[in-house]
Length: 356
Ligand SMILES: [Zn+2]
Image (tube, rainbow, N blue to C red):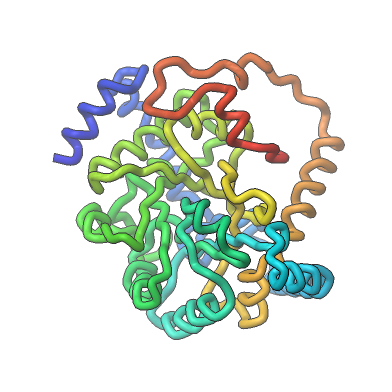
C-alpha cells in the first residue's frame, strides 16, 4: 500500500522517470554506506579521522570542554541578567543529536533527560514558536533511526513528555549497518512510532554524502526519501538532516525545492538571535558525556565552536586555489520539482546567511 502510494505521488511530481530513478539507486551509494568506517556508534558521522588515537580524541574533547567553560563564564552573567529582565537576545536555543543508546547506557541517558528538564524547556525540533517563547530551549533529535534508541531512549523521553525527532534512512529500514548488535528500525516499527511526541524526518534514502552527488541524484535522495516516509506514516515529513553533516549552498537550495521546512546540521550554529532559521545547528550528545559536558551543551556553551568552525573553513578556502562555480546553477530554481516551497526569493528569505 505504502509503496503504491509512493509510486503514484512520485509519478505526479518528479521530473525524471521513476524507472530512471530506481536504476540510479545504484550499488555505489549503497556501498558508500556499507564501507563507512566502523566506530561506535555504527555509522561514523564525525569529521575526525577514525585512525586518530584515543588520546587525541580525548584531548580534543578536553579542549572543547575547557573552551566551553570559558565561554560559559564569560556569557552567563549577561544571559542570567537578561533572563531576569526578559531580554530576548539573552535566550539560548540548543539542538542535541544522538545516535544509538544501548541497553547498558539506559540509566545514563535517563539521568541526562532529567538534567535537561531541570535546565531547559524541551521543544520540538521544528517548533520555532515554542522556541521563541523560551529563554532556554532544547530540542532532541536522533539520527539514522537505530532500534536501540527507540527501545532504550524513547521511553525515557515519553515518560518526561520530551519531544523527539528521529531522522530515518528511508531505504535502509530494518538493515544492520556496521553493528551486529543493533539495526535500523523496520517499516512496521517506524509506523508504530506515530505519536504526538515523535516526529520523523528524512536522513536521505541511502545515507549518501549529498555534496558528492549530482543535482539529479541529490534531488532523488531528498525527494524520494520524503515521499517514502510520508507514505509509510501517512503524515507530512518536512524536516531533514544531512548525513555526515555534509551540505553546501547547492544542497540547501535542493532541500528547499524538495519541500523541506527545516534542515539540521551536525555542528552547533548559534540560534539565540534567530529561532525561525531554515538551517538549524545541533551538538552531538552521547550517554557517555560527562555531566558537566552535557550541562554545558544544554545551555549553549558549545556555541563558540560554530565560530571556530566557520573561521577554519574560511582559512581553508583562502589556502585552496579559487574554484570557479557557475552562478546560474545556484540561482536557477528547478522547474517542476515537488511540492517544495521553492523560489529563489523565498529561499533567500528563509536561509539567512550560512557560512560555508
Ligand atoms: Zn546518519
